[in-house]
Image (cartoon, rainbow over all chains, first blue to last red; front, side):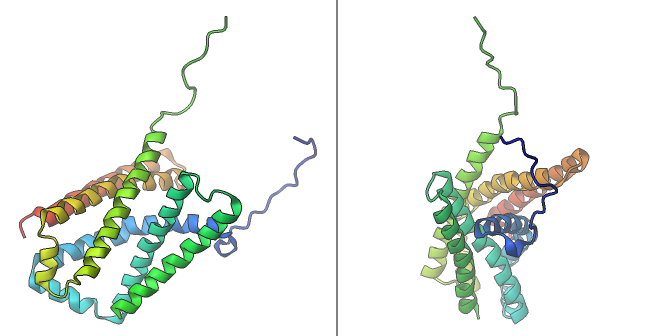
Length: 128
Length: 119
């Protein structure tokens, strides 16, 4: 360690848009996990209960889900799951030391961000 | 002779087990997700009868319940990580963590009642 004083104070760039891709994947993994815990999961359980509960319930959700604004909300919820899924797979690979160096870790982070959006777009095209 | 100090000076040692189980539950849920997507694409449920038939089989019910239990544990570890990072007051942390735990157990019981309950 050098005895020269480090430059203080330090200014960290806390703007999410300026994070490097792995950092962006990381914080979005956290945010998507929180969003899935609440409100996506209880809404999903409620929808499952209603749609399996009765024909009328199924029909009601069928009608509700045909509204464009609801489809957008559904796609947002789907993106939370998709991003969490792909980012999680990346972390599992990193855990077994696959692609752990800086360059591949950076490219895999970009791949995760793209895959999350791409799967959401594919589902969007399918439900529209 | 210096007696070797065998006790670890830090930690309660639940961390590694939690870390590993969070990964194992992730693999369980990822497998279920891929299976479910294949099922849905194989036979798109277009009616109430189709939808009900999808969840009528015991394999699907058990697989979904295993997913729900894996999620319960996975989300418990994940939410605890978030709570430990952002909530600085120990009292508040205890309250929120207890709340999260209760909510997760409620989700699991709710899932079981949807899958097997009177409907």
